[in-house]
Length: 79
Image 1 (cartoon, rainbow, N blue to C red):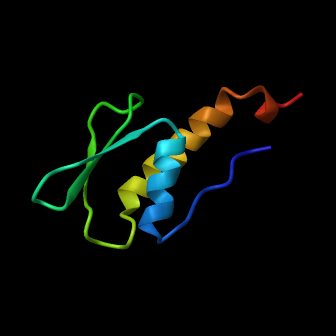
Image 2: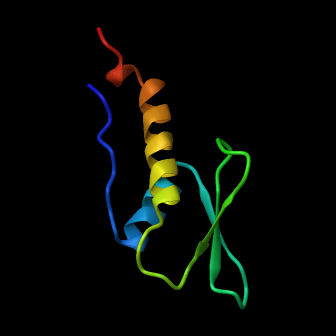
């Protein structure tokens, strides 16, 4: 059983997924930008917080995190 790739265009859902996977979202004052920070990645993502769509880079990082979580989860291992 493999994890399903996430495809969403709603920024709120993507932000909720990021927080669920253990990341942090930091808002930058007066610029409208958001930093998506996670210990799994070396550099944070800087995303325009005023846009309602989800950048492809954020989606790819969410999918990388979900695959990494599934790789360490015994439910997803082949028995």
